[in-house]
Image: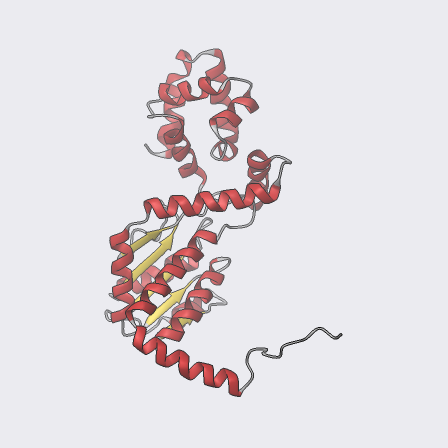
Length: 292
């Protein structure tokens, strides 16, 4: 069901709704950005109806249940929430309760959903693509820049063909991926609100024949249409801060898998690095003993 289909069904069925269902319909039309992240119980309390009324409302619209309707709602707003709206969502989800527990619990749920739903074949194919690529370009902007940098740092220790695209403008991106071609791989990160710069760069690489791995959050992501392989990882925001826990865990899995596949080379590399780190005192080794 499309996002416009949801509102159309509400409009078409409104005359058959009960009083409580009409209240839900009004709230969704006016505050769909908030409703998308509410549980059935929470939505019922805000509107002033029972949880069962909310569930029956979803079924009345033709959904299997409330979670299906909620997914449609999230599809409506995934790339539209402003920072202010995210703050409102956080208030609805967490209230003024235990913020620490709420945020960490949300990240745990993202990890669990990613583990259950990630396409294992796409994961294996992505590893193979990294290993055989002539050049690996890694791209992510705004908050996703941290993900791109993290993957680049560790992948560079295992491979000598890794290039982090660090753009400060749209033109910078295209200058850095100018020579991308069919033998190359581009790994792109993008989460709501999706970066236009990342989408355009990925389309350029696609048109040049490169293999593309999209690490993103949803089948609604604009990266999907050009990706060779897609790795979906849940990152439902809890507030104006993007949740990067699940994508980081996926990166860890990619790096560890590649390290195992290149175990002998990795051992030699780290042996050489250890000598360099010792010689140039990269890490603090002094042991402080308690004075007696």
